[in-house]
Image (tube, rainbow, N blue to C red; front, side, top):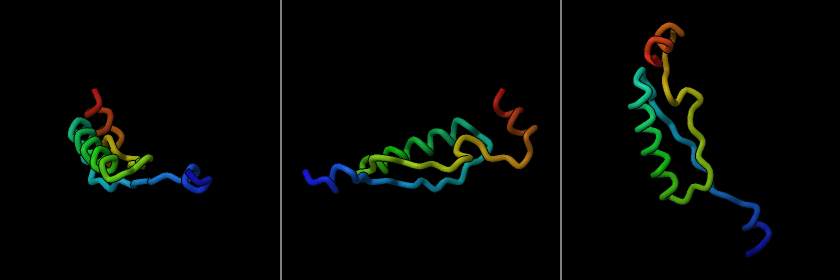
Length: 65
């Protein structure tokens, strides 16, 4: 194995449309992560708002109880 091969890796970036249901968002993220891994990804990036996306903090607090 060459030095370049040892220093390289495959990265994947996940694009999601997260909503207000954390369980559904997690299920969608895990499915996409599994697909990226199957396609050869060594490292997977997800959006910063993967688990829930809401405009108001009160909605987030309510859904996460």
